[in-house]
Image 1 (tube, rainbow, N blue to C red):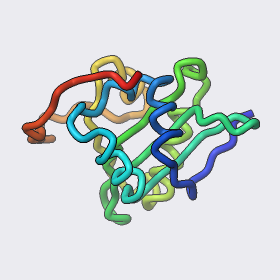
Image 2: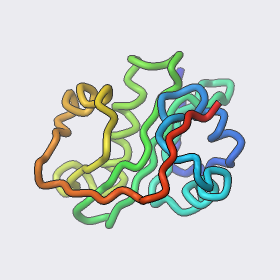
Image 3: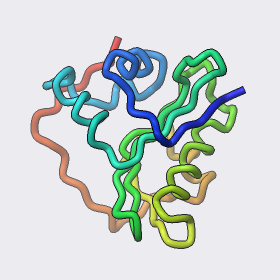
Image 4: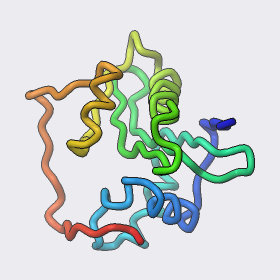
Length: 144
């Protein structure tokens, strides 16, 4: 059984361990990783988690929202040993509901190509009008 929470703030060590077990481990730049991640964990508007009954963190969803119109999913990940069990879908649905509900909230995210089918299955599609500027300091790496 998976236990979900929308009231939990994670600590750096537990999140870094989770990143090693999920595909999110390649999402962040190397520059300032250990100093920037605690800021993410402390300041993100929505922080949802999924845990096994024994407390192992197996899914996360972080988002930024205005609580009225928009939700930007900054992080969505599931432990590789727990994929295809509906955890990611449940976390996204919880985030939308908490932000204001599906009738009011437009969802946006920046996705890896491999995750596009997942988002498409939830009705979240590519939009040619979504624009982005990436930060200039970005050396790719994988949390190990």
